[in-house]
Image 1 (cartoon, rainbow, N blue to C red):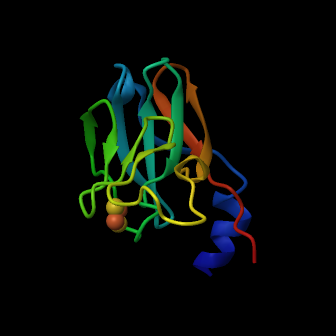
Image 2: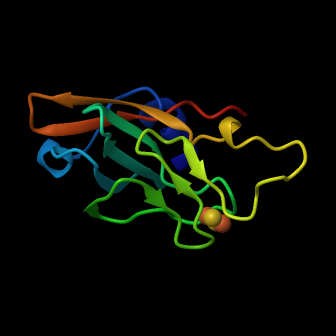
Image 3: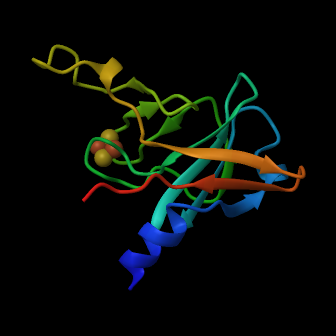
Length: 129
Ligand code: FES
């Protein structure tokens, strides 16, 4: 049932994830969850809102919880670091790994928008089956 709801409702409709004030300042973030999916909403240095998966692309650790501020998102497990628009910024001990390019790694993005200056909303991508 939950899987059907994810595909039919959550993947097709906007979901309120928090108050815009939580990410009003540059370099702020808000960790939240939609239908069991960890989501991270950020206000990047360019002032844009971004939303993406809150799961590290290395080994799947949860990146951030709650509200906070910082110039980057740092994974607590092995310190991979992401810019506030979701691009991988650094991956310690991965330089020189064959057939791997840091520039190809990015947190999966969700659509995001601010409503009436009060709520940030996110729309999840449909999962492929
Ligand atoms: S799980 Fe995030 S850096 Fe390893």
